[in-house]
Image (cartoon, rainbow, N blue to C red; front, side, top):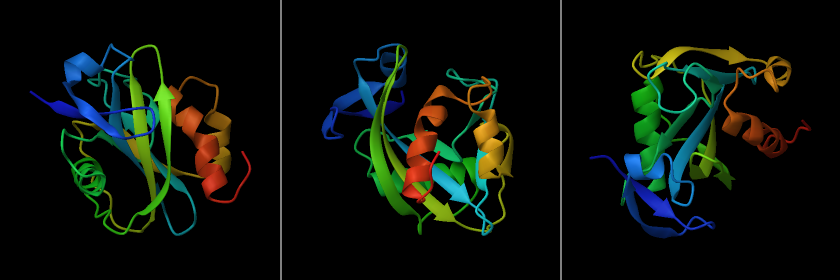
Amino acid sequence: MEMFQLVDGNGRPSGTASRQECHGNPRLIHLVVHLHLLDPGGRVYLQKRSMSKDTNPGRWDTSVGGHVAAGERVPDALIREAREELGIDASRASFLYSWLCEGTFESEFAECFMLESSQPIHADPGEILEGRHFTRDEVRGMIGTGILTPMFEREWPMLLAALGESP
């Protein structure tokens, strides 16, 4: 059984729970990692989530996003998820910010990182329908259309601010 790291609203460990317990119970805040992958030209890589995902299937999302396993260190989860989802090495990623995303289905505390890289991407077809790099203007044009995950739409202004840009 897959066990997630639970945290309080400030990201401090507060226990563990299964995927089944977390998904569907927004009172259980679980820890996740996000990696924003940028190419040398500044375009952001987005992944289109597999139709088999239990949340937001078929929607465009963060380059890499994944749950932190119970007792797992955040940097280890980030490196593991980047390797699993895109086949890349994220060991040089920089921390950007943390934020709490509360929803009606689940609540996640996201530790967010950025990596500028030209590494070849080998997306896991079990996780990702497709992926590609988008300009910031292309992403801005996708906001509010229903093709992005709600969490990514909420995070987009934070990413732009961290990159020194306005939404």
